[in-house]
Image (cartoon, rainbow, N blue to C red):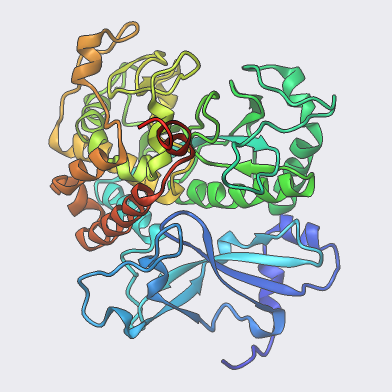
Length: 462
């Protein structure tokens, strides 16, 4: 690759990055892409080796790997011929790497084949495909994610249970502390660093709260374009992990990291506006709920079970739905007005802010795929006129829970996904085949493991 003649493109970078740079010399550029699991892959290079006009390359096989790094055999001709993908920088995503020792820039890249066509299995391209479906109808989807996660003590030995962190008072919290300001203050230095890193990166945070669990925190993000918000979630996960490490803690986005603590969700608020008028299509001219809003709810109810491998993508994801006294995770596809007992909630709002909150999504989900899959459900409802059930006014009884159930295991979720023809066609059948193969292999690898519970209770007792 030839070296660029000029670094004039640096002057067009966002103001937040230029403020972070503050006249210092930029040393390194990280060229990153989100993989199937939502983790960053790519290459880092000195500034002189990078140019926005000179693509770099990675093998497409990065998408044939499980979370353990194991390769998955696909029914693809010449799979291991390792054809290259071109990484094309989206310069609108350029932002600082605030934890780097010397000034560094990170840029999310789009993925294309060597003829310039989008790589269909790239999560960012999957979300772009779904946004494009809405735009063909004259609609623009809008989302607002909520990120829950745990701060924990460093877990060096995977055989040992994860423990809550030690706060400023020198004690490790174990009790539930929902919305406690005192509990948030216990981890004030970490929270301050997250804010510091976010400001340097040019990212916005709406609010921060203490969630139910010990060391469990929630960040709420502003609403906006789904691709922009998915990019921000992707970046925020990096920032939060690095901020925790700076203070001798781990930050984990596992759905259920501790047995006796609640799980962590990524609730997604969703609405749709008319591109020409900018008005929320979920509301009629008189301010009441529109037919399209009903259909969006109906489609989400109909297809939510089918997209579980995207919104609950790991074996551990389903531990979050286990019924327990301290679990508020929804286990159904019911819906209701301001009803947190349902998987789908309509928050109190005005006509322009009318939206549907998907509360089933786990924070361990890839944000690009979770948002894409959740929006696809509503889209199919809108175009097919799917009527929802009656809204639930209170907690669901046993009969309602049974009729609105969601899969209780990863095995069941993958079986249901096999027959999800409309969803698979919308997301791309080739991509869905690849994704299912990777997740089936991860499930097999998990079932091969012998757990501490089995050694504790079965070794000498059976």
